[in-house]
Image (cartoon, rainbow, N blue to C red; front, top):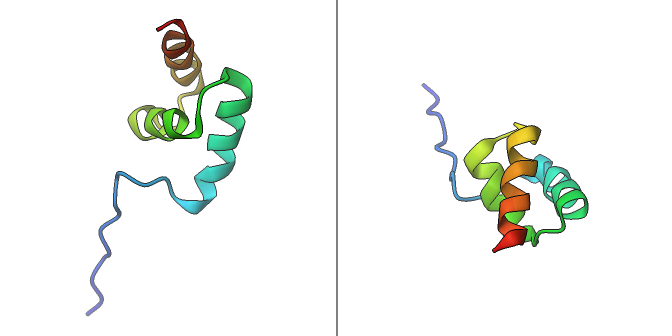
Length: 58
């Protein structure tokens, strides 16, 4: 019987690197910040953009 691998929630999967790059370009945040936002909000781009704007204001 095969067991499911647990995914490390602290890492962005390889396919999401494009999303990290995209978010860094459109929101002017660091890749580290972009990964954290993607882990927190998933693909909710409206929320991602809002949160990224808040990060830039700090």
